[in-house]
Length: 66
Image 1: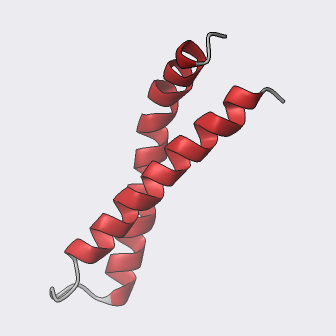
Image 2: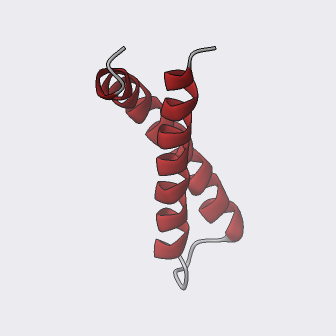
């Protein structure tokens, strides 16, 4: 496996986790149930990963001169 794959995965998965955490923090104290909050955080994680993957991988390749 190439090194840029690991670096890219760490970046886009880490960013998706951060976005999910922001979502969870944003829903504290609201009328949403725990199931709504956790389901929403999972949804945000999945969508963030889908959106970030095709953006981050080429950027990391370019930055690493591959």
